[in-house]
Amino acid sequence: YVLVIRHSLKENIITKHFEPWMHLVSLGYYFATCIIGIVWQVFNPAGTVCWVAPKPLGCNQLDDVECERGENVHTFGHWMLVVPMITWTSALCLGFIILTVTVWWRYRQSKRFDFEAAAGGSTGYDEVGGAGRAAISTSSTNLQDSNMDRRVRMVLSQSFLYAITFINCTAWSMITN
Image (cartoon, rainbow, N blue to C red; front, top):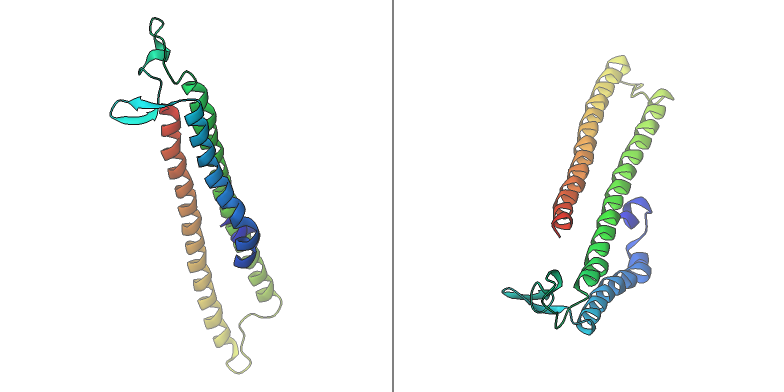
């Protein structure tokens, strides 16, 4: 969305230049995490599921129990799970901010040009219809402007609420882990 809305890139440019990198990064992360997890032997039974855990479960927290596998669980969890989650959450929040500011800035720019056009002689005064026609045109333009203002405020508040909701959902999972 940022590439389209903020930078006005066309779909064919995104498909040709950016999309392969997006796929490479997302798939590369998962394959790297999987391979490193297998090499470090951190995938072990964790209760009813197989997950990132030492074997036997809890051996890294007990002094008298030696771990058979998964001594690097904490390091793996930190670098392969927590750091990317914080990085991606920050990147997505930055994207929300960029989109919100871009929409607001473009809206303000369009309002400025509307005002300049109205002040520069395009007041809605119709040569044939006279002053009464200008008053009708101006009042309908004001109504359209107020509707547009309301819609832009709704879009901006929705974007802000999406960002807050996303942060709320991811922050709690990061805090608890």
